[in-house]
Image (cartoon, rainbow, N blue to C red; front, side, top):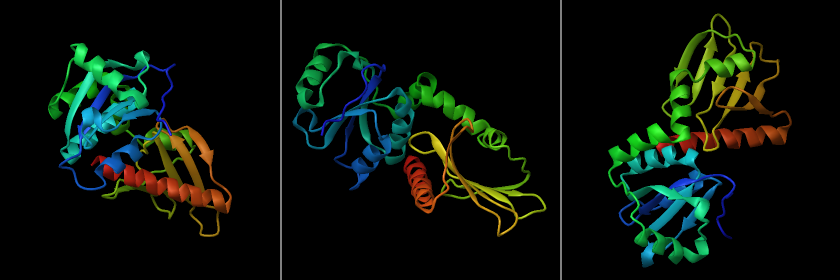
Length: 231
C-alpha cells in the first residue's frame, strides 16, 4: 500500500534518517508514532538502512524530538515542498531532484530543534500547552476542581479535588494531538466519565458503552506509549 498525503495541504521539509546504529524496533516506533499524513521512501539511494520521510508540518517537532532522544543519524531538508508531488514508488525522482537542487540541509540536532521550534505549527501549540495544559481542559469540560496535582513518570496527570475523592486523570498528548480524560466521581456508585479532548480542551468524543470504554483505554495507553517514545 502506498503512503499518500493530501496534496491540498502544504507539507514542508523532509527527514532522511539512517537506522544502521539504532536499536531494533526504533524505525517501527517512529513510523507508528507519525500516524497518517506521511510519505515514506525506503532503501534511500540503495541503502536499506536509510529512509526518507515527508510529513505534515505538525509532525516535524515530534520527529525532531524523537531523533534527539534516540541519537539518530539524520539530514533535514527544510525547503522541500510537497507541492511537487513526489511518488514513494518512484523515489529516484525525489533523489534526482535533491541532487540537482541546492536545498538547505541540517544535520545538527541543536539546529533542527531550534528551527522546528520557531517555524513549525506544533511547536507553537506545544509551548502553549506546556505553559498551562490543564486549565483549558477543566474549563471546557465545566469541571471546577482544585487540589493536588500529581504527574507520573509516564506522563499521566492526576488532579485530586480538595476535600473529596473526586479526581481527573489525563493522558499525555497523543500522536493525533488529543488527550484521553477519565473523571472519577466523588461517590463510588456514581458514573465515571470518559472523554477524548483536543489540546484546547474541546470535547471530541465521550465513551459510554463497554466497547467504547475499551477503545478509550487503548487510546489512553497509546498516548502514554507515544509520549514515552518522545522522551
